Structures are given as C-alpha cells and as structure tokens.
Length: 245
Image (tube, rainbow, N blue to C red; front, top):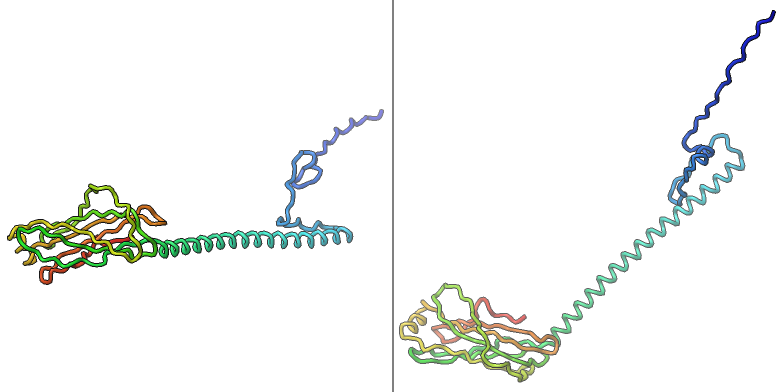
C-alpha cells in the first residue's frame, strides 16, 4: 500500500510596484507632468543598446539647445522690459523739463521793484508807496492787491493779516516790464509811538498780498513785507513774507 502525499498549497506571487515603473504608473492612472526645456533629462538606463544610446544623445543635445534658447528668451524679455521702463522715465523727465521751461518763459511774474522813502510825523497820516513790476514775459491780468501796516515791539514775531478784499478785482492788464504802485496807508501815530519807532523800540511794517492771472495759470500770487528804517526813512525787506512762486 502506497501512502499518497497531499499536494502542496499554491504559492501566491506578489509583485511590488516601484515608483516610476511605467506599467505600474499606467495601471494606477497617475498622469506624469509634461517635461519642459529647463527640466533635467532622466539618467541613462543601464544595459541600453547602441541605437538607444544614440537616440538618448540626440535627445540630450536637443534638450540643451532648447534650454539655451529659453534662457536667451528670458534675458531678451527682461532687457526689453528694462528698456521700456527707462524710456518711459526719460520721456517723463523730458516732458517735465519742457513744461517747467515753457512756464518760466511764458508766465507773468510780479515782484517788488522798490518802496519809496517815507518821512514819519506824529499825528499825521501818511502813505507808503510800494512799486510792483511784472518781470515775466506775458501780461498779468485780474490784478488785485491787499495791503496794510502794523507797529510792533522790536523782536516780536510778525505775522501779516491780509484780511478780505473790499473791492472787486481789477480787470486791467499789467504788461511785461510795467510797474504797478500799491499805496499802503500808515496811521496817524501819537508822538510817543513815533518816538519809539525812531528810537528802534518799535518796528513799523508794511505788507501786502497780490493775486493775478496769466496765460498759463489763473491763480498766481505774490507777497511783500518791508520794515521802516528810522535813520534813512527807507524800507528794508523783511526776512519772510516776500514770495512770488
């Protein structure tokens, strides 16, 4: 009697899938991103044939050419953008310079030309005459002037108060080089005030603000400020409030 040996159980075969395996990736349905010119080529496989080696070398040369072309394109695009930016800045600077040059050459410009000497007497009102002039190249129109005078202690901070215009603007025209006198009223000061002014204890100021228009801007202005000099009766220009932008 022969003992029968039971058959061996079937052996299950397992296949380990490795990342990058073509068959496994296709089975898993994983999409690979497309390669670009800047991506490095994969390493050469081991055991490749002569034909595969030549094909790989051709792919490597093509890849290097595409990489160089891509780098050149990026550099060229950056250079074009930089040139456009520089050109725009240069054009703006040229326009700004031309605009300012045109305004300076074509605008009206009113400044103080002179202030006439005044003899100050007690209890007697007088007038200080300040002569303005248009030193620009074009006429000034709609000329208005607000002026005043003030006596203050020596060393005190002076700030002009222009007030409001009581009369409508003049519609006359002040041509280039033409003078325009502005009469600033002075008070009838008491003998004590006049003596203090002449002694230098008090300071007599005259000031004013002028508005006008020209062919370029409708709202130009200028200010003037003078201090009376007791020894000569002349007027000295104040350190501030003499502007003509």
